Image (cartoon, rainbow, N blue to C red; front, top):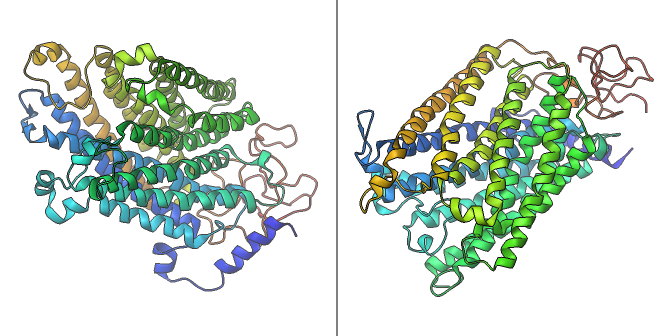
Length: 594
């Protein structure tokens, strides 16, 4: 018996040795699927909070100097309060929505199922990685929860230094800035726990025959992302500890005659790879979804996996492009410019390979497919706008303008969130045993796609005109005259953002409706090849019974000449009739004969 099989059998014995009650099964669970769904539900809740903060920001910007928007007085959201709004919005969306969704939710739910494992390598550590994340949210908003929102805004109970929290501003901010630092240390600890689990599980617990060359690109993306987390997150943790010491112990790392630029170097050494932590899993999900619904093998599988590794590696050597305006030595700036442009190469490889997969495919425009295509198109726009900022001379003109806001939202909203929507609707049948409503899903996609572009594409225009970000309104010293001609853009973007927010309300309605009343799903409604589709929907505790499956091929064997159907599951043994899953995905996931 192989090492992998022994590991899985041990996990099965541990998982099934007693009957679990409600709390053990649904709350303090060790089952990776339950933990993944806990991450997902928490991230959905935080999405509501982050989205509400974003809408408040947009309404304040649309109100302009008058402070009035749609009959509401928005003046109260100016000044320091505005700093709190954009600081908390960015923090919530990055650390409590996108990363928990793509890494925590999909990583937990999908990885063991895709590699043929019964659970994660360390189930207790896995559960702990989830339960400390809500604690981090409570700490983040702790001051406001104790004092009340209005009193907390006045007393400095919330972070107000931006999501980057550069010193010296973060040194003099209220006590909410310390809560922010502690919260992100806890979130980072959660991420590291999860990353240890993913790396160990993928290396040690693959089913017989599941070589690295037969893993799905979703698993590859989580594997590379976990390595990024392990190398990058300790740096952020160290930076936050040093900032806390500067604030409360009188140390001089960054402030008190310290080096503020040192903070920027260390912060971006983590935070630029963090961008890929938030986009790589979306790339893996989009790859799987596009292959399934184009009914074609993924174009350039090895190149796609290598491109992910290349993006991760280059991500650690380009952090300085965030600091072109910090007085950087021109020779060093030239290095960072060239290195940043090189990172476009693996991204281009992936984009062309997605197009190659779609070329002459039998495309099915399902809700997951539409969102995956939305991911690809928005990621390309965001990536192209990033090339502008890679050039030092151009960056000097557009730095700290709305052009930067447009770029990051095309990558992290247009990219990450469309990838999240693709993943939710694709694996929804496996999570809940019911199909996600195609009608509501397609309406949500159309509204989101149109409203997103109407909200963020004009930011390229106003940014190229020089409109600075992080200002609630422009008044005095001729500013109102300088920027008054751009106010109609602000109003248009705000109305579009309201439609965008309402579209997400529709998504939540569709989510709840489909989970309760959706059409019941069979084992393999998408006719896909990966191992999770050989199991019941939802899969049982321990996943594979009675035996771990044997894998005979890669996950993208569509329209193969070896079978009559247009798909060929990974565990189907063509030499032994009846072994593995049968044509409609309803057969056994038994081991079969090698």
